[in-house]
Image (cartoon, rainbow, N blue to C red; front, side):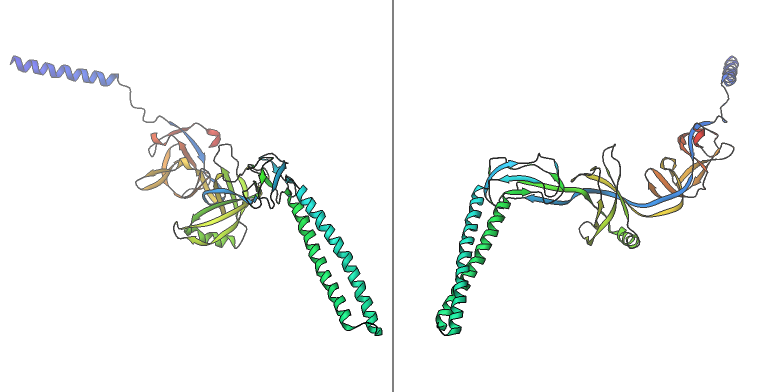
Length: 367
């Protein structure tokens, strides 16, 4: 009996303690608003783009080699300098070639005099032949001598032209506008004819960007390319890089069977010279523009087992889950179906939300 009374008393004490604890605990804040960030879905024109990566290539490149053998006497540029077409770059000792030119000119002058005398003798023999005072054989010999000297004079003229060309080769000029590269020979070195590259020049205004897309994109690219010139943007990997504007100028004539990609090339004016040969860039090819597209920040889109959704804020500041379909992502914004323009979607704080939860939008100006 005593044990029964003790057990009953212990149960009573525990029950009183539990009741006391429940009275001290505050009620759950079921209606407390969850702070979130939210924006309104926008309706605007969005470009339809294909994105990838590419590399910058010079518009034209020249490797300069000497066309004569001689001593490099002067360098008229600094490495990395911008040069114009026709600028004097290098000078080779021209004295041997100047002397050869003078000799060729002297030989020409001598043979021209002899040709003139031969022509005079031929005319004289013709007059005597017509009057019967000379034989046909003498006239023929005079005419033959004149023709032989005429050929000699023509050869002398070719020699003079070649000598002039050799003198011109002593001065190496830039064949294009571009940037000078590294000089591989220094002043005073012997330059050999058609030997090593002395210096390179690369034209960078305009400039090319070469890139590849999957072959599945080719029909769409060709379709839109047949209608309009397609715009291309290229952006460097640096955070400070600004996109450069160009246009699609080349589609290769075959798909690479190894990679399943098609090679393309875009041309850029590159007036500010932000693109540089060999640079790695991000490429966006714009096929067309889609009007009246519904756009929201990509961070608003959530994933669940049933698909993608967003939290839409209703007029009473409660949220509901709305399923959406993301067509594509353009510069951090998602083009979606399933929303109406002006609907407010949550962009931050979704982890604390459930359907019907009350929210407080912290950025009211963006609502």
